[in-house]
Image (cartoon, rainbow, N blue to C red; front, top):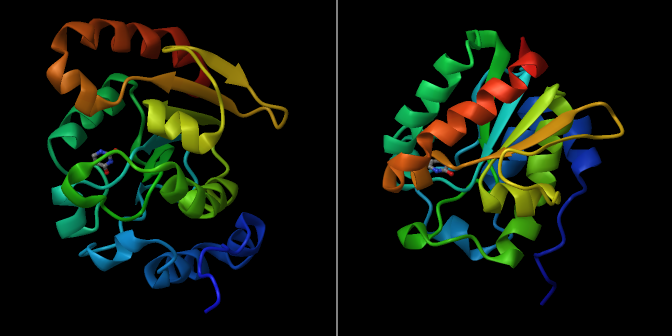
Length: 191
Ligand code: URA
């Protein structure tokens, strides 16, 4: 049997445009997660945003609706977006994985690898000025090593920033002030 694990390259996926990319994601069966997913969860927000937030993976609400960050963590993310004073056309939200891991477990290294071309193709098509990594899984998938609240400028001039995942803050409300301090520190990047 031939392996199903080899992915199309991100460049090939992006070359076909958003519609082609969405079709490829919808048809993907490269890892086991498609078998238990109700919906693939692709993106929310503007196709050409200034700022892209990268989350971890769909949860229960997202799996049911096909919309990223539409549950409790999403409400907190909406609060950050409002605090950043981003207009509707200025932001988008995507995830490291497009399928929900059973019982919301942490994505495996292999799942992240398999799904990465989709993430890279989304970023190539969206061309954001700022990429905000929401937590450690996004950091791993993006392939950067950053401290909390650190920003780096890439060769292509894009800035990448790592902040707390909103779901982590639901359980650690005391760290919310730090998150707002990170957003204040980098406000000049998207204003
Ligand atoms: N958490 C994530 O990382 N992504 C979602 O879409 C929802 C919750």
